[in-house]
Amino acid sequence: MDFYTKSDIQSSIRRVDELLGCGIFDQENAQNPLVQSALTELLILVRDLMAKSRIYAEPVEFTDDVNVTPESVKPAPTLSLSPPASTF
Image (tube, rainbow, N blue to C red; front, side, top):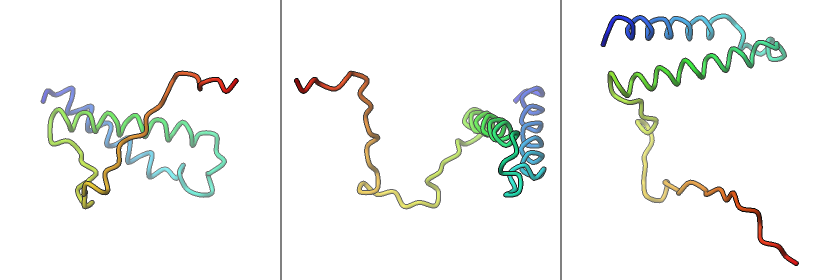
C-alpha cells in the first residue's frame, strides 16, 4: 500500500470519527438541514473504506455473526422494466 492510500484511509477514519462525534446525528438535531449532508458524506466514506478493505485487506463480511442456511437465503426480487400487459 502506498503512502497516499494509507493517508487517505487514515483521513477517512478521522472524518468518520468527527462526523459521529459532532452530535449532528443526535435526536435534538433531527430537523437540522445538515443531517442529510452529514449522512451522505458518512456513507461515501464508509463505502470507500469498504472498497479499500477488499483491495488491501480482507473484505468486510456481514454474515460473521449470522447463521446462514439455505432456508434463510432468499433470492432477490426481480424488477421488470416492461409495462404491465394491457387488460383490454
